[in-house]
Length: 555
Image 1 (cartoon, helix red, strand yellow):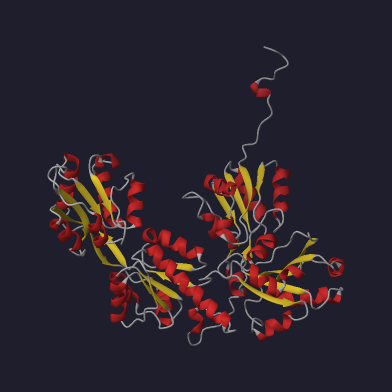
Image 2 (tube, one colour):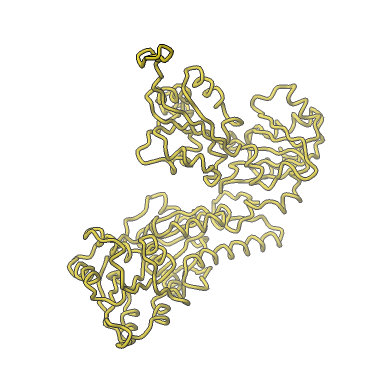
């Protein structure tokens, strides 16, 4: 043995520590998480997050991840209304000592926001390995969403000031500077910070923006000057308020001028900004629709109105699925996502997969139905080129031809309450149809009490009705929407049902498509906003027009 190489027993012991990732979760918009942050969250054994960003990051963590809470609601703190903040450094190191992968998520960026540096030093002192995943800093991200760029082609001296910890010297230096100042404060202390800057030498007419809840759909920005911000808050009844302790980002300097921000306010000027929109569909059905609504600035709230259950007698469905495998059908037609799901579940029950569709032509009604088939591994052979409905499918469906079609039978899995339009049309085209009940639709359970109250009391700005059944069922389980709520319907039949229930239809989709319905609502919101601005009026959301609603500016 080479004496220069130590034996295994002579090697120094290596601590069996885990690893800590200090991760910036950004200012609030979940879309601002970096790709590296998402990777780290997916691999985490323990997630320790600040309360403000817990929901933002937990979405990307694996199921079962340990999430010890930083806030403790003991009796004393609960009585005082102030939860106790546990020692994050000890929580982090305790989890890392057990050999687990720990993600410590902070608001904004670990290097610019909060006290993450102290926690990093504690890990370094104890020999716990760590890494840093930068995030979008609050002081940088919020001005960008408020339409206030911090630099332009002329360049600018940008300084960051925390009003809570700023010294007299800091205020003095900031007051004599002519650069851009980004001040972290609260609603209550923003006016005092402005006064400090004026006292230190800044001109009272220096433009100022104050943004609360930045990068979220609750964002609100006030444009004023250092000398007028206190009066703006008073006239707007912003203060005094129990919400005065909410953090804000103030930008001081010419880049925040009101006329300039009018052109650059891209986020708060979205057509449905801040609108609470009721989507009466299940989460699975509403996913793409909700994403589209968010892109318009809305806050979608999904309420299932229909529950899907297996057929009472499954034998018919079982025979049809077996017939697929044995070559009984030339076509299978899917008219809904639920039909795809029902067939897929039967396939899995029998140990089958998408390969069982080999040699069978597949038709689908609607973009979401087609997408669910593609996800299953099946590319539809026929999707309506025009109207996305049973009638539209029949327009493109070929008639039965005994020369080219070896089999004359179509498998149609559908709901128990489906209309006969497609069946009758296929028979007229010469096809035999196995019309099979693949699932039953029943009325869903009522939503929580606060949701029902918001529906009836005007707490929602709009509701999207995607079928007549969603109208009937929503009214049945939750009550009729308030008359200030904008009613949007996917087609004439749905609109007629809504009117029969005493609802005023404000928006009608130009095509029977959920994406076109959302687009039509966005166009309605944009026209409403432009009309208010042209008349010199304040832009209010529909829910803010109801009696007793607290009116707030959205621009």
